[in-house]
Length: 84
Figure (cartoon, rainbow, N blue to C red):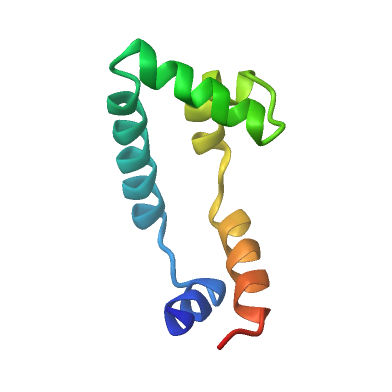
């Protein structure tokens, strides 16, 4: 896991990889809200985390805003963490 995180931090993520991941997450997101209970669960989770409710509504928009540079920054910080 650490090696893959370091690889991603070094730029090992192509635009195609990012686009594939976006579509995968978007499909899972759509499937997740098939019932009223699942929508309510997402709302409660957002509130528990202190996120605004628009977080749930704008999920797809947020996915589109993520760039390879954003992910590289996250993976760089993550790979710098000391672990077991």
